[in-house]
Image (cartoon, rainbow, N blue to C red; front, side, top):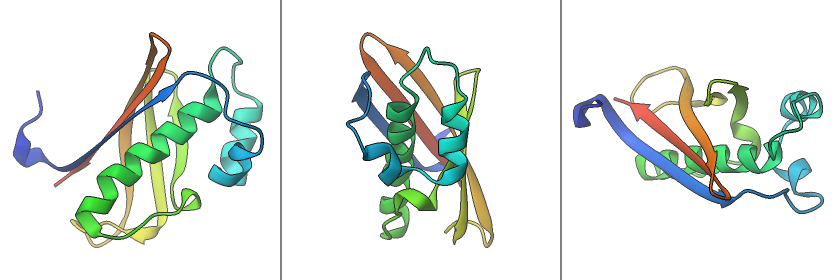
Length: 121
């Protein structure tokens, strides 16, 4: 159980579990992510999951900073246990004076891709 004082922001996103429209993956991903996705197991709509994970990050980030992140500002690594790590290599975290890694969780069920990110305080 998480206590309110442990976190300063939460971002949640839900998307329909289907492939991204043609050309969208190139707009939302960086080379490192596209390389990983090209070799990922085919059982998931990884592009849609990537989009949702980045949306969760942006939803947690903006209320905290009032700054927009671009899709290339967050680099996602998926872990098979239903988690992901997002590196923000060019961004300073407002609660700490260093570049930051965010951790999130994902689930795919009932035709939806669900992602959530917590930003620790």
